[in-house]
Length: 340
Image (cartoon, rainbow, N blue to C red):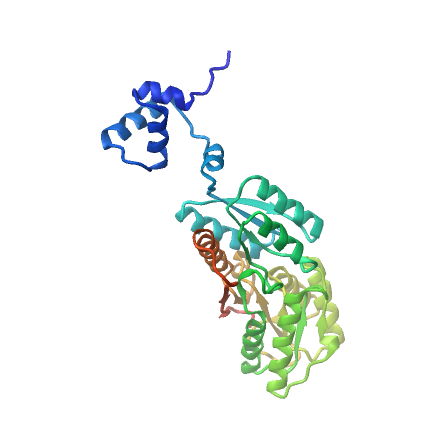
């Protein structure tokens, strides 16, 4: 027969104290002597008692759970955010509860409802563009704070931690211009992406600042897969051989572009031999970027730092709600390697 799990009453009996004394010892509240706390802990250890935190949270109207809703848990950007968020929350005594919504609003609402049913104290969210107000309304009804970690700020009614996409693209384009490039293309992303729109805005404004040309046919949409990026790069360079540099929207796009440039008869690097070489500069750093030949230069917005700051922000808002939404912007930096 299965041995029943020990209960708090068993701990109290073993320690020779009342159930309320055990509860106070577990919560760290009340005036209890060190000797009594020691007896309770010894009883817990002997019996193998495991505290039901969910039940305790319900009784105390508190929770140490933070919910995270992301579109794609396999995306390296969100993987690094998750790592930074989880690490920082652990230091603060909270635990992460991860969900994935895809790009569907109805699925995101279901994720939110599930997290609320689990009694989370706060939610970190990568929102979908359509109708974020329904997400805000649900969270407000449950009196649960939300921090947005979208690549682009979608709703100013939410706390926000994220990159400055326009500044990142300006930094990247300036880097290429200062290396002598005059024909710079932009590859990747979906046409309905607000992040892409912000980056293209920074790219175009920087080219205009330097009096350099940009053409709509040099701005190419493509799927984030390496295969799609490779094919798009090869077609772009074959059709427009004057292009000497490409800004790549995703980390995977940059890797795919490397293969596509080589298939188009180009070498990849910084030296800019006219007609022979093309420079590649991607957004977001991943481990593979330093393993390719040549290694890939990137513009990094430190997603791990975004996660850490989101953790600090959501916990602050749980403990002391802010009267107005707070914005934390993580500046971009260039990580120069061999490709640009």
